[in-house]
Image 1 (spheres, rainbow, N blue to C red):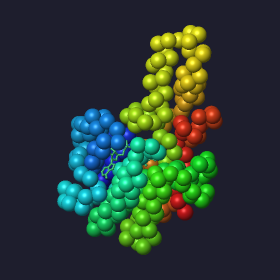
Image 2: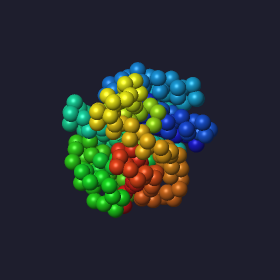
Image 3: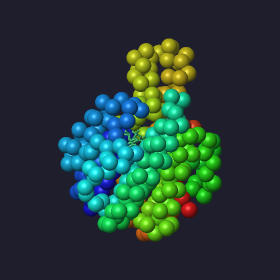
Image 4: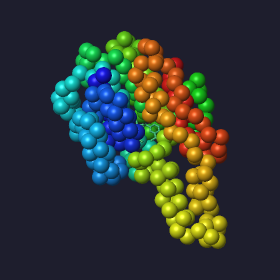
Length: 268
Ligand SMILES: NC(=O)c1ccc[n+]([C@@H]2O[C@H](COP(=O)([O-])OP(=O)(O)OC[C@H]3O[C@@H](n4cnc5c(N)ncnc54)[C@H](O)[C@@H]3O)[C@@H](O)[C@H]2O)c1
């Protein structure tokens, strides 16, 4: 299968592109190497992907001319590219342009792809807002520019599916963790804290609540992260033409579950 993975130099996109390539698919990865966090990390991910046979293209999905570089007609699109996270240093324009405008241009590209079988949009539990603990039957009620723009992007993709332009589904991931995790994410920070905890140890450790939390979280989070496999499996055909619900992973029963786990996703 020919697969286009957007946001392939990023955290989850790079794992998906790598896994698909290892499975024998012909993978093209697209990324604009946005400076939201270290572009060196993204270059490193891209180099790894190239070594695994992924064709990496540096392109900005907001820019129509950049689509000329996408000469292959994909059978499947996984759309990970986004301005992620809820950050005080990101502007509304960052979210608007990278989440909504970029998705709209990608949809325009996708509608011209004659062999496209499925467009898998990657959404987020942030669409649920402050109480993101329920399943996909809960009504979206985002409370951030990130959540609002990701919900709009998701609905644009699903609107195309409702209009029979292409088949699509949307996966609302909860916080994902693992190697190559974004530097602004919880586990990257926890691991830094754990390194400090390991160094200082003893009484200093017990008097530092942040480091104690880091240790408790590390113990609690000993569950496998199977998001990628499940996302690929669902995206690759199990949806049977629907753009409906999917379960991305298990929830460990810990106080940190909302941060550490992958949650249910999908839309009705
Ligand atoms: N990490 C999580 O816990 C989590 C949870 C829920 C949903 N998601 C969603 O998963 C997707 C991937 O998240 P991530 O954590 O891997 O983030 P990431 O920042 O590591 O990856 C996103 C990639 O998209 C690229 N990108 C951004 N704008 C682009 C544009 N205009 N054109 C081309 N490329 C562009 C970035 O350079 C980056 O490499 C996002 O859609 C995000 O909303 C992530």
